Image (cartoon, rainbow, N blue to C red; front, side):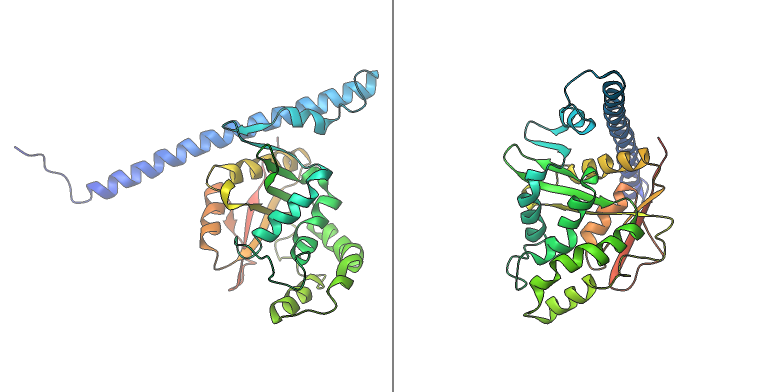
Length: 274
């Protein structure tokens, strides 16, 4: 006699697979979080001992310890803290992913525009919140952040943007005019939920670095550092039509916030205290 399967057997199997995958991801995320927290605490301990007791090289900073305690994918790509000599690669990655994940080279009168808004002010103001994916030859992706969006928005509007805005006095397209107007708006970053989710991030990966779990590791690395600072929440805003990115953020545990609009979706994540 042939076995009789219930009519919803296929759907049942798919549901079980999703539940197993979700449980595996939660275990992996917890393990990654604990390892990254341990690396951070090791760096803090060594730094405090060195300063208190005067031992060790002056260059053995917390960041240096974290550079040695990296997260590695296979034998190729490493997650590590940002260094000043990464700056040209940060610019390149920002431009080559600046059109909803696609190459924005030549889109504006200067390829400096997107990095001047969405990348360089972050690595200049809070380099300790910048982490990169390094393939051994160059940076192929990054996550950058501001711990307090209100403070960052004020600094960006009053200090950073006036220092670079003169480069863009002659926009060549409606898209550039719109982007410049947005950059010059001191309130554009202040979403309604900003006090509940005070930190915000930008993350970009070149196509060859995608699909390897690097985005998750970059965000988990940042999240651990923010937790150590006592930051209660993290948010990001993206184009509402970027469905692939939206699915990625939901898988990481971000949820859509009420401040989303028809054209821009805002996701938030609560940050657990260490």
